[in-house]
Amino acid sequence: MTVALMWEAKAAEGRGAELLEWARANAPGREPERREYFAAPGGRVLVITWWDADFSDGLPELPDPPRELTARPVHRWRFRQV
Image (cartoon, rainbow, N blue to C red; front, side, top):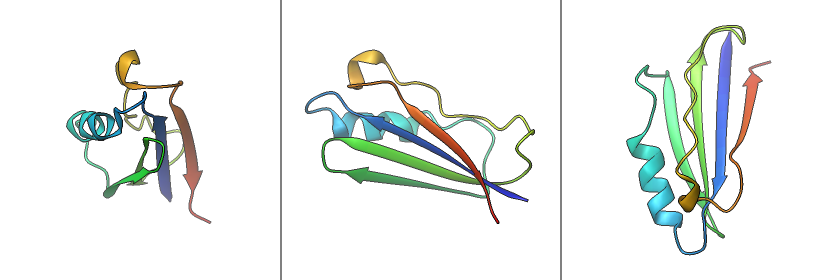
């Protein structure tokens, strides 16, 4: 089964590039099948990882960034391929 983990954060004013840099530098140690980074207007950063795994597997999540980098709590979603 393929599982996609999505991690999305909104940067504090003017800190979008710094948040993206932080996300790239803090990827969990276990490597997914695929990892992609996206940026959007308003300082939003999205990281999607794809895993050959099951929902119940202990997949590593990208941690929360330092509070001063974000405008709100991080959002996380898990999807399975159908």
